[in-house]
Amino acid sequence: MKTGEAMKYAVLIGDGMADYPIEKLGGKTILQAAQTPAMDYIAAQGKMGLAKTIPDGLPAGSDVANMSILGYDPSVYYSGRAPLEAASMGVALAPDDVAFRCSLITIEHGRIKDYSSGHITSEEARILIETLDTELSTEELSFYPGISYRHLLVARNNLGAETECTPPHDITGKKFEEYLPGGKDGDFFSDMIKKSMIVLELHPVNLKRIEEGKNPANSIWVWGQGHAPKFTPFRELYNKTGAVISAVDLLKGIGVYAGLDVIEVPGATGYLDTNYEGKASAAIEVLKTRDLVFVHVEAPDEAGHEGSIDKKLKAVEDFDSRIVAPILKHAEASDEPFTILVLPDHPTPISLKTHTPDPIPFAVYRTDKTDSDGAETFDEESAKKGSLGLVKASDIIGILLKAK
Image (cartoon, rainbow, N blue to C red; front, top):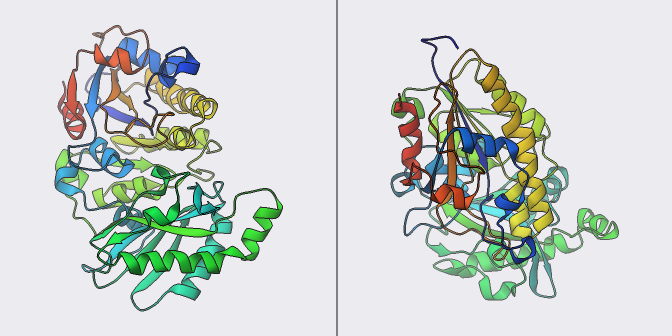
């Protein structure tokens, strides 16, 4: 290895990978049961610990957790999920604009059947969102199409800033009427959701989906609202250049506010069919001209929300073999020293189908260091014994970049 070369950093995030012991897996977690040789190598050759990605008092969401991982303390910077997605979508927010996540969901027999409308395609969803914008937008409201089931609603004049909303993935199977928006302006947004059901019920896109045996996107659901946040640029905080690679607007939006480059990868879907190879190749290319890359994969989280053991095992194994392994191989062969950090952002336990704030396992491997914890596997139990202990997740990037 060449001496005096600048360190390169790869932060690899498997969204929602962490889990609880599962009876059907013999009491093992997903990470313990999955075949993950690349992450196991990083754990064996590096050091492990537990990271608290969700500060006390904040929701256990991917917004809060990934903000922490990217080195921004949510206690300081967090203002809501949707404004981050707005930034990724190029939607500028005025000071009194309130951005909401506008999910396309499936309601059946009065209950939320599917928070993702069968992972509706972005092309189908765009048609539906544009129809809603035509039918329901006003001077105070505008709809913006995003990716798959994830879209945006912007309300003006602080409308909805104090409305109480519930994420749809937290209430799958529940009666939607019991979880409609509440508090100030709650009636307004509840009425809008019901109006969307009328617009969407017989839409040709949905009739075709029903004909094909797919879940229709027959309602919207608004949540995760907030005003535009103000971030200190990443380069100003850490004196490093970097980029974000992700399929989801949330991560891209954090990158935009942080002043990081956002790299678009064709075929990146945020689900099990995402373009893993494209993401890994893009990450390797990014590091030719930048110091650091964040690579985020959504698939394990989606499988966790679905409560599917098989899908989550596959998502974790694909993350390991198709993201971690090629980047690790590149790092090992490089003339430059590399630091690889691998971790989930939060647990999405199969048993709960939603996020929890439990500390997550992380492992750090440096190609120019030989000292290690000697852990055999990358999982929750190994992390508890790691020499790095329990850390505040928003401190990890700073610790990595300052390490000698």
